[in-house]
Each structure stands twice: as structure tokens, then as C-alpha cells.
Length: 358
Image 1 (cartoon, rainbow, N blue to C red):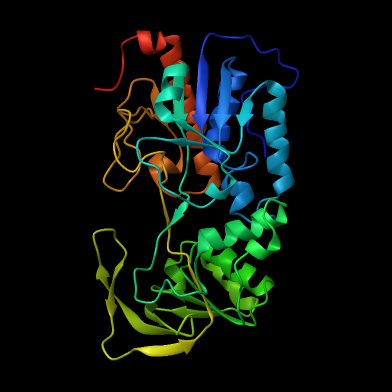
Image 2: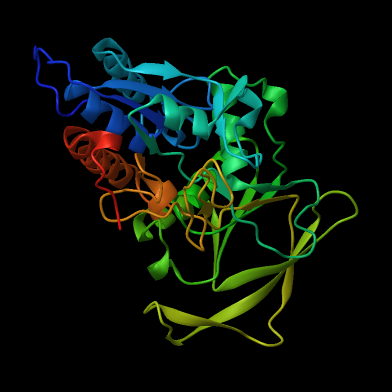
């Protein structure tokens, strides 16, 4: 995958004044790095993982997005002069733990980077899975999809021993119908599950992954449980059963999608030994609340204007950390667009220019 889209073959890049730090080496961060290095700026990228790529390497399977293509794109960025600082976590006043933190070898405070660079882009993505918030979901054998997939792919890359991959039982249930849920269902089969259920509270017609992806799962033998919702997980120490309730679609709600209504008396129980929750991801900026002058919205995303400017002079945000979970291409494109805002900011005098969001 090419990230330096603004560089022409054989182009001689003219150096410009300005040093930019990017936090996060996923699609948005790499897209921004590619744009800025092609425009002649010095670019340093900080990331928690042992190599750049973000979710494209550590949360998406090789068969969906070839890892060699990601590594080729990163290699080109290195050759153009982008500096990568791996195994580094950028923190603010309050640190919290998310998937991938086991690779962190050093930490640096956000304020230190803001002071050191002419501009900074936060592009840390959405590295925390949402929980089901039902009784029993903390039993052994119950996993969050992002952590489940992350361990599998980190092991395949050689960064984690196979012993740290979550154990998959013979009967697995995946909750959700996005691409992460699809990947988790397939990986649970590959990890040894003989029977796999996919529970989705709506129908295949509303599945975020699309009907084609869900139908492919069905062809693989995955059993689709439409209009169902887990309400309780039971077991002594490990997951043994999941209590479900059937749903029906009501009138459209404020989002335009049919509202969901549980059907009284429709509860039923399934015997499973693995539960994988794939019901969305949460933005993971370097802070949980306003810090270093960078404010967050009520949903945890970084507060930015249309140009990607945060509430702190010289600090921008790009990708899922400000937009919420989206597709790889959209995150890459947004990173490039925000890099253009950084370019305009630096050309106008940067932190000395005095122009910022009102």
C-alpha cells in the first residue's frame, strides 16, 4: 500500500522549514506522514507497536489486506526520510492501558512533544473494544474481538508466543456483524472451533460488514443468529452458556434505522465455550479527559474543527481518533487531508502565526 501518494517517481524533494510529530502509525498517521515528507517537512512518527502499520498489521488478516503491501509502503516512507520510533507510548496526565501496550518499552509526555515540534498530529485510532455490559462477560473464554485478533496476528508476526494467543474452544459465538466480527468468526474456525455462531441484533440487511461478507460466513458453516441479543453469560469459571433474547424491528429511530424491541418471553440458551464481543471500538487518544489543552468530545473523540485543529495551538488530530471507527481508505484519506492543514499552518508562520480555531 502506497502512503507517499504526493511523491512522483524520481522526484527531488525540496526541504522546507518545519518539523512535525505524528502519534500513531496506522493508516491516518502513515497517510499524513506520506503527504508531509513529500512536501519537504521533517517527520517523526511515534507508535506503541513494534513496527509501523497499526491495525492494518495487527487487527486485519493478511488475506483481507496483504501485510507485505503495508510493509512496502512503510519501507518507502523510511527511504524518503520519515523517522519511526516504535515501542513508544505517548501519555498525558492520566495513563490507561489498551491492546498492544505489552510492546511499550518507553513513554513520553504529550507536552514534551508539543514543545519539541512545530506541529503535531494525534492519529492514535480506536484501540479499545466496547464491552457487552452483561452479567458474566468477564468469565474465562470471553474475549473482546480486537484483543482476540491482535494476539493472533502479533503471534503470526513473531512478536508474541503462541501461548499468549487466547484459547478458542469447540463452540464459539461472535457478537456483532461488522468486518471485525467477520474476521473473528473466521479466525475462531481457524483456531479450532467446530461450531461458530454469529449473533446480530438486527438482520443481515443491516449488517455493517454487508450482506456479501455475512453470506460468505454462512458458506463457511457459520450459523447466523439474526435478531438476537446476548443478555447473560453463565459458567463456574469458564464460559458455558449464553442466554439470548430475540429481537424485532420497530419503527425507524432518530438514526433512520429500525428501532430494536426485545420480544418478551423469547429467551433461549446456547451452549458455547468461547464468546467474542465485536460490537465496536472506542477512540484511544493519549488522554481520557482534557489534557495539555487538548479537549475531547463527549464520545471520547478528539475535539477538532473541519481542518483537524484541536483546542491546542499547533496540535491536530486525524483518522478514527477524531471521527470514530471507519474504513482503512477513509482513515488514510483523512490523514492526508489533515496533513494539508498542517502544511497551511506551517506556511502561515506556525505557532508564531497566531491564527487558530476560534
